[in-house]
Length: 412
Image (cartoon, one colour):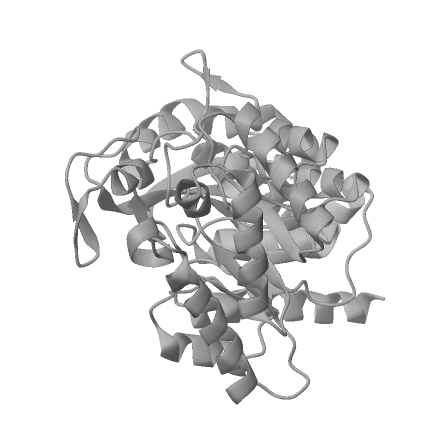
């Protein structure tokens, strides 16, 4: 089966872009906005709506495969590509990439994905968001051409075994919405609530008291309204604020994580991005030190690396040196989804945990495709997306996994 034509359109992402550097530098908050000058590459304002490009491949038999080019909320920071604007990329997608797709044989995914992931435009790699969307479309096209689910295509080409049960989901929601937390608990989500703690004074507290109170409140609410056999893990994404609070001193930071784990009891605790160092080398060294201190002190907290662990090569580096308990495989940051697939499998080969992550800034389609990657590659858990509404993302991902597993059950 070959590609007959390529069609592109600009659309909306599932969330927004936010300039983390500008926010941390003291930008003035105003509702959802921040006033001040943006600091990170690609931003015109500190907070702005994000766009995507849908790449649609018309196949010879009239079927349409598509993928969505999307990037992360906190673009342009810690080694990431600049904020993606669909309108800035659709021109060369139509004039340069579409002719390359013409008559492409989509019988196999892996080689096609590698070709377009490595393609250079103007002497430079394509933006990670473009590589992400193009390879989604190629996987979808192969699945349509071969009349298989996308999970089956991945399993066949990478030699994996498809999971027999849904992959656990980490609900990604707001920290200031107690009604959303209640719904998440009632739906028995495996990990919650993610939330976002980006400013030390406002979100963590100058003594760490606000974050401690939040963890305790989540634990209390689970016990109050959750069913007796419901035992989720509490996950907090702190965006480097603990490193700021403790001036990158790992000893007191580890003690604080011990207090945080006590506040979360009786539920297990995962903390994402406790620190964001100035360089990748410093990030790895500090993560290793913090992990060793926690082990030495008998503190049971799972550390998750995100910033400075963006690409497949970054993830391999973190895994090779045992820098962390888990990596968040932030799917748009890896470019081609072939890299995401390889990242999950590499983590498994190194006995390091992985979260098949991403961002609220994606789309319903990219979220569905990621569930197929999850089923085929078996990460420890995956992030709910798109958006931060939780309910919609859980519906999209849970139903896609349920449909796929039901289809596969009839074939076996």
